Image 1 (cartoon, helix red, strand yellow):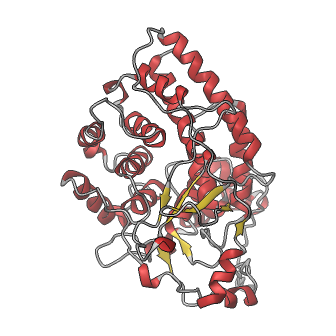
Image 2 (cartoon, helix red, strand yellow):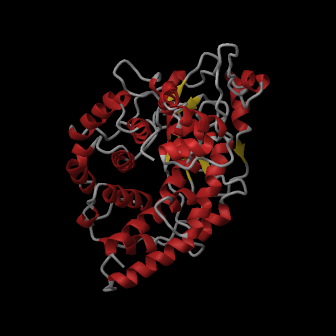
Image 3 (spheres, rainbow, N blue to C red):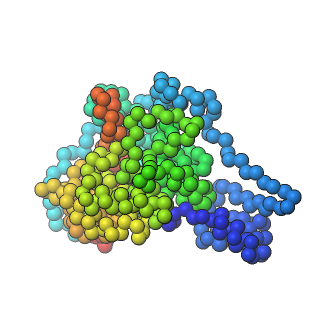
Length: 433
């Protein structure tokens, strides 16, 4: 999917000019729309087309909020918000497991490309089996909320739609039946958590946000609200005076519990909006801002929510391939910047950073610039016996520094595993075996 479309105007215009099309649209709306636009819409969502006449007028009411008035009031301020947060978390989260055996410097084992591709494929399947065992029956991925500075502070399970979407997008790289089944279940979970007209929130006590909304929209792109772009006007209205997209979508009746530490115009959030909306007139200023950050070398430390520069590059390259030709001018400089992150041993850091760097290089067509065999060996050697990869910090609020309580991180073995599977799929493709 290249992005949401302005289908309403096209349908109305076509129906005004073609009486046969108008009749088909009224009689069989789903089939007519799918044929007209060459798409397959979600089967479990009804589509109705109404025709006003000179004696009949239709008023369409939006669906009611999924939160009751009492819940919305409870989420608005102070201690009530903290209590509401507690009810979005799931205890107990297990202690951090010991990491995999310490990674040694990856050296060429002399294995052939075919042998390494087989090892990678086996690692992918074992990783998928692990994911099947930890994703819940509703299709939700679990993440863990923890304190970066103090491991003694209790850890909590959480399952926000954002995490499920983030991981499902990584798994879309795989054609394995297990991956397809997981993504199907995840889509159902995301549809179940959607709020009209196509927004999502991380926690129930927080406002909706564009990071969650864009990633979830990318995953369930054939849902009619998303495909028809029902959420696009709200996104475009959520820009600052420089045309950059702000993270939180603060409606008048929504809680404002984030205002004290809002840092808007996050580069990853803007890249995700660009990935969803595509090369849209409303994204041009955000695109130019991202281009300047990359070309001027100002990405490090620019994100409130993502701790590693490689993560920002990963999001920008994902936007590049989904919003082509937007950002295409950055292709060569992005390759140089990502390759410049390597240490003296040629590594990109921990296994999560390595996986994201591999996939980012693949996205821009530069994966041949690194030793694919060595990266396969790094990733496979880091996998545990149960098929998982270690829990690592994936994202978190980087601006809260008021004591250990504020240094919140998020990650899980499942999150790391999803990115490692994506990287192995990319490496297998490059190995050509």
